[in-house]
Image (tube, rainbow, N blue to C red; front, top):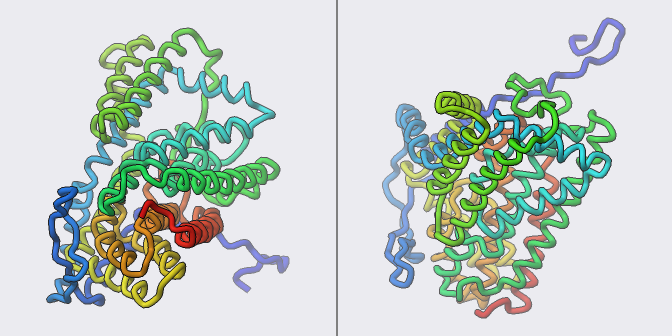
Length: 471
C-alpha cells in the first residue's frame, strides 16, 4: 500500500501547513462568494448627539439591491486593504526597525541572556511576570497591535529557556489578547462602549476586575501546563513536526559576553522610550502614530549610545524593517476582507441576522447569546469601535426592553468581542511574527478559547441575575 513502508510500517503523513497568505486568499475568495449569496442590507446611520459618533438606527434595517463583488474588484481590495491598515503596518515597521537598532548593539541579547541565566531552574516566575505585564497592557491600555514587534523577543527568551516558539508567543501576545478580552479600563473598548450606552465612564470596574483575574488565572495555568509539557519532551510541542522555511536567527539569543555598562545604558534609553510611549496613551490620549515616533527617537538615541554613526543606524533600521515585511503586509491582506464585505453591503445583513434570535428569548439566555453573537461578529468586524458602532445601538434598546442592565450588555460586548480574536484566521498575520502555522495554533488554542467563552457566559449570567449596574 502507498502509505506503508516495505516492512509494512505505516508512514507518518506530513502535516499540511499552508502559507499564511494562502489562508488569507482563501478567506478573500469566501468573502467574495458571500457577497453573491447573502442578500445586501443596510441600516441608516445617524449622529449620536451625546457622543458625536456615527451609529446605526436600530429600527431602520432594510434589504437593498445586491452589489456582489467581482473577481477584479476583490483583487483591487488587496491594495486598498493595505492602505486601510497603513497605520498598523507603519507602526510595526517603525518599531521593528527601532528594536533592530537596539538588538544589533548586543544590548538586548546580553540583557535577555543575563535574565535567562538568572532564572534558569526557576522559569515559572519569569514566565508569570511576563504574562502579567503583557495582559495588563491589554486590559488597562488596550494594547493589541502595539505588542506585535516584541513577539520575537518573547520567543527568543522562551527558546533560551528550553521551550518552543508557542510558549514565547503565549507569554507576550496571547496574554495581551486575553487581557484585552477581559478589559478593565481599556479606553478603546470600555470607554467607547460605556459612552454609547450612557453609562458613567469606568463604572462597574470591580466586577470586570474579578473577571480579568479569573481569565488570567485560567490562561496562566494553561500556558504553564503547556510549557511544562514541552520542557519535559519537545515532541509535545504543537509545532514539533513543523518544517519552517523562515529565517530563525531573529529568535536566537547570541552569547556576546556579559552585560556591560554600555549595554545597560542602551537598554535604559529604549526602556525610557517605552515608558514615555505607554504613559502617552493614558496621559495624552496617544495612538500608534505617537508611540511609533517616540520609539523611533528612542531607537536612534540608543544606537548613538551604542557607538553607532548615522549610516550604521540607518542600515540596522532598514534590516529590522526588512525582516518583518511578510508579517506586516499580510495585515493589509486581511484588511481586504472587510472592504469586500463592506462593498458587497452584507455586513449589516450579517449583524441583523445574528441579532434577531436574541429578541426571541429573554433573561440569562439573551446575555449568553450576546456573548456568542460577539464571538462571531469579531470575525467580520475586527475593530472594537466598529463593533460598538454597528451593534450597540441595536442591543442596548433590546436589553432595555428585556430588562437587562446596560452594564451587563456592555460586559457581553467586551468579553464576547475579545476572546475569539485568538482563533479567527483573519488574525493569522500576528502568528507570522513567531513563525507559527495557523493549523498548529488552532490545535493548541481552541480548548482555552472554549473554556474562556464558557466562563464569559457564566460571568454575564451572574451579572444579569445580580442586576449589574448602575443600570
